[in-house]
Length: 117
Image (tube, rainbow, N blue to C red; front, side, top):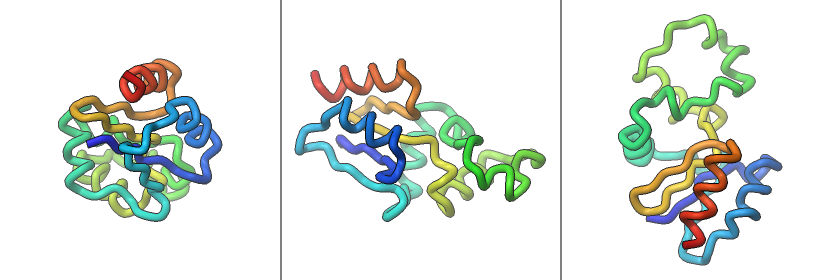
């Protein structure tokens, strides 16, 4: 599978997509229009080791819902990400068995290499 989950309204995600310049065989999914599904989230969790690693604690709702004051379980992280796209670190990029999560320079450079090789 070659797929990039992104937020179309996020300037950082737009910039990263331009840098990667995915070929036509890469499926793009705007997570605001269609959130990630449980099966894909489980696949990503298996690759990175935890749901917490996929969870964005920078989301405005993280503090407004008081989640920052709670001791969240792996089940909680998964549930919140499936309920609300804003809790997903983004972009999520899948190229076969390789996954790239987030927008750090190192992650983006690795994704560019992977998608353009």
